[in-house]
Every structure is written in structure tokens, then in C-alpha cells.
Length: 419
Image (cartoon, rainbow, N blue to C red; front, side, top):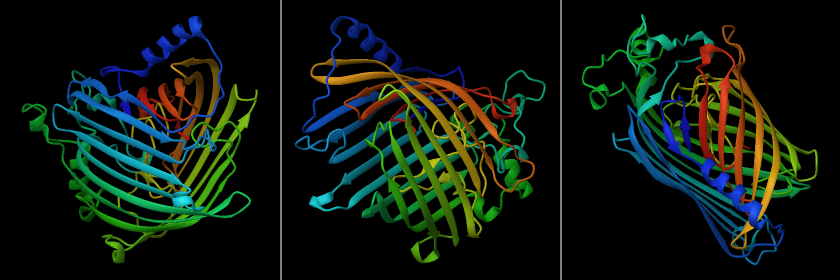
């Protein structure tokens, strides 16, 4: 998943692929709803350039096994793999495996392993608007300029998780799982970027002033156990056009599981899909409430939203509130919502593979709960997606935040719909 928070980053994107498919479709348009069998593979290059991070190169792969085709468009095995690296030392490795009906049973097993080495991880403080954002602090030539990497930290992350889900009745399922975070945070290593840059950053100021507790400032380990319930009536899993997918989860981080702090998080997520014109127009909605219900959540875990599949990092950025700076909205308890209209504009078949394109309009919002100084952070935008065999999705979203305190928008490239 690649995110471009400013026009300064240029990337090779799925837009060219989508445009090519539409052009070819005018010549060889076809419609196919035949079931797919066996494995299908799709990939997206991860290419880009940033003046601070250097050249970015890598690949995102998605593989799905449909077996004999009787479950199509749902799959028997799903694998998402990403690897990318920058010429200045940042690395992303992500592997997610999902097996519905493992070994012929009614159980669904997922496993997630992620490694991040980030020289310029965004850091905008805690509790949303309670920590001001001023673009002038990082804009060279501005009167209040401090450092062009003022809103960053250095962060290394290892993350792993495994969950098991089983049926109860009438679309209801139980879910349980365990996981582990190992997060190391520190000041941005400016010497790897530019020896002439001053070392002052928001992170270093927060540590020095005590706003970021010293016992949390360097990161730490956090092991957890999760349990809850899932309701899933979607017509298909990767590209739903009808149904509900909701879950309620309690996640306990405990010293018995290797966590440096003991605390408990409640996460409620509701996703619903409304078919407005059969499969051609879908209103997709998502709402999430995550609340600390016991203990104190350490700052390095606050950005993560827990899920029965895999946790996502937000709020702000490509996975949550598009158009708002990544991790702009971080706190112990948060709420967010997405509203997205997906319009299927063209369908074709190429080399016996089914493709279609969608145009997407969306509104995203979210805030930190129980913090009087915070308000809703809002973003709006448009997106374009190319879908292969109703499962492999490549997307580009262009979004703008509605408040200058949240930045000036972004361009995001990612695989899959957000929800």
C-alpha cells in the first residue's frame, strides 16, 4: 500500500493499467460470469520517488485459489504479500494468509506477519487538534520553518497475529486470536537524510516536555489475546455489493502474553453494503468505535485499530480518513466513519480473465473521543479501481482534507477496497 501525502512524490500507478483496460475494452468488450477454478495471481509494482526517502521499489502480490470453482467468487485460500524498499533504508514486508474452511472444516484461519523499518514515520502528536499542526514548521523558506522532517520519527515494527473464526448460526460467528507487537521508536535520524538538518522534531519536543511519557517514548512489546463475535451476510467477500459485515471484539494486552503494559480495548465495527442498481452501483459504509475500557493504552499502540482479519493503522491516511495526514488523529478512544459510492463503469474479458472498472466517490471522518479540544477531521475525494475476477482490486484515491490543520490532501495507491 503506497501513500503520497504531497504532490512531491511521483509514482507508477494503477491509473495507466485502468486506462489501458478501458481502451482495450472498446475493441474487445465481453461479459463473463463463469466461475474461476484453481489459482489466480495479480500484482502491482510499488515504484516511487521521494526527495527524503529516495527511490521506492518493490511489488504487491495477491493470490487466490478457487479450487473447483464451486465457491466462486469466494475463495479457498487467499494470500496478500508486499515487499518494498527505499534507497535510503526504509523497508516494508507484509504477508497475510486467509484460509476459509481449512481442511474441510467450518473454521476460518488467518495469519499476519509484518515488518516495517521506517526512517520517516509520520508523527503529529496525540489527541488530534489538541496538538496543532503548522505546515510552516516543515516548509522550507517559511518564516516559522524548523525542519522539513519536523513531523516524523524513526520507527521499526514487527507485528504478528493469528485468528480462528467458527460458525454459530444464521451468519453469526465466534472469533478468537492472539498477536504481538514489537515497536521501537526514536528521533528521526536526520544524518541519513541531510547532515545540515537540525535535530529538533515534534517527537523530540514531546519527549523533552513530558507530553509523551518517557516509559512509552521508545516503544515496547505488546502481546494480546482477542475474542468476540462476527456477523457476516455479504454476497461476496472481496467486492461486496450487498449485506452486512460487523464485529465486536475485546482485546486484552497482558504481561502474561509479553506486553509491557496491561490494558483492554473494545472495538466495534459495522460495515454495510447497499445495492442501488444491482451490481452496478453500491453504497458502501463503515463505522468504527474503538475505546479503552481498562488500564492505559501506551502511545505506540494507540494508532492501531483492531480487527478480526488484521489491524490497520490510523486515523488519517490511506486506510481510514483519506485526505487527512497519516496518523493525525491518535488517542486512547476514537470513532470514525466512511461513506463510499462505487459505480461499475465498464466490464471486459481479457485472456479469459474478467475485469471491471469502478469510479468511487467518498467521504471520511473521525475524531478522538472524550477530548474536548478535538473535533471531527473530514476528508472527501474520488477514486478509481480495477477489479480482476471479483477479488483482486487495484485502486487509486485522490482526497482532500477539509481543514488546513489536517494537511492539504493526498494521493493513495493500494490493493483491495478499504472495506
